[in-house]
Image (cartoon, rainbow, N blue to C red; front, side, top):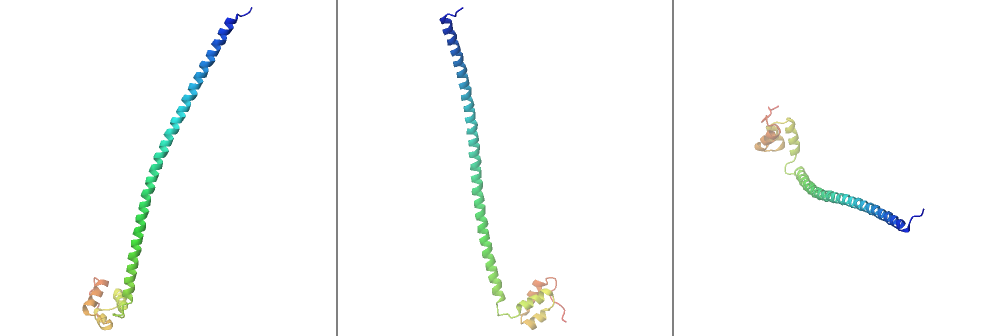
Length: 144
């Protein structure tokens, strides 16, 4: 039995149509998968860009904070330098020889107001003030 050529042509045409439909279906699936991947990558890129902007903002804030700390450090150093200069000026003051020694004795409670006046040449108000500052609960020590 021989198959007429018309039937063979029809069968070939049907097989070609089926192959074309399968090919189109595979092409659509591949295209949909590609679009899905592209959307996912796009969403990831947007997320990374948002994170990057947040990090840049935080870094800028951190930089401003560091600048403030630097400024505070410079101000503190300047004040410390001024205080050291004052301390050096007081220590080098020759108008009141022995004042540092009088101050130490008063803070240790080893001298009276009268002794400060007699031994160190302080006025009575200076001696009382020195005693009051160093020994607020005792205005004067009994004489020895």
